[in-house]
Amino acid sequence: GQQLNQSPQSMFIQEGEDVSMNCTSSSIFNTWLWYKQDPGEGPVLLIALYKAGELTSNGRLTAQFGITRKDSFLNISASIPSDVGIYFCAGPGEYGNKLVFGAGTILRVKS
Amino acid sequence: EADIYQTPRYLVIGTGKKITLECSQTMGHDKMYWYQQDPGMELHLIHYSYGVNSTEKGDLSSESTVSRIRTEHFPLTLESARPSHTSQYLCASSRDTSREQYFGPGTRLTVT
Image (cartoon, rainbow over all chains, first blue to last red; front, side, top):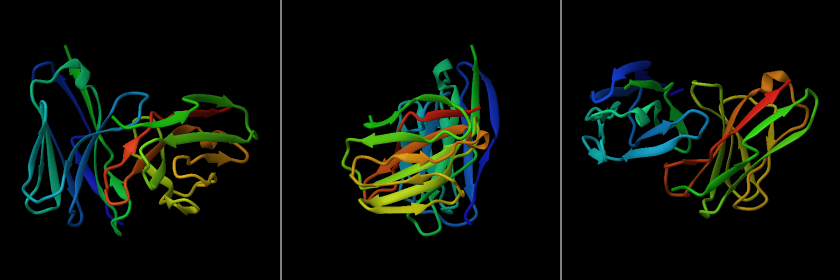
């Protein structure tokens, strides 16, 4: 089945630093979704991407749909303590009806 | 903000008990999903439904069962809880024409 590989697995950064993470797929996707999960809560949808090359922002977050359609990137500028959490990428499964999730990138911010 | 609710948020229960985890959404979404997630790990789809009276098993085998009698309600039942069922259970929903899934806050289940 399709797999998503997220990198890095975890990050421990200083408050104010910029963050970059990515997600790669073994096959072509036509949708990329980025979620954030706070401890003890459900994932919250941050950004949805639908077109190769698309660059979309949500506040300090920016995500890009890779032109090969096999990858996506999420950047967080000027990190703050509330950015702490797990960031998941997701895309449509083999038959397009379900989502496949990456294993997540754990972000810790040192203030 | 998504309007999807799960109860209870936390449940500690003994082995062999029957439990039902509730999930409701007020967005009129046709599609609903149940995921199982161990702390800090990836999400695994265990059940999904594309509408009333439609339920399917997900990618991860689960001893739980689900029902979809009303559009807004998608409960998950474990007939006989075991310690191996200890996990977080997340419910999600989406519009029929969209892949964007919206999640509830989850139920953290502990079976002793």
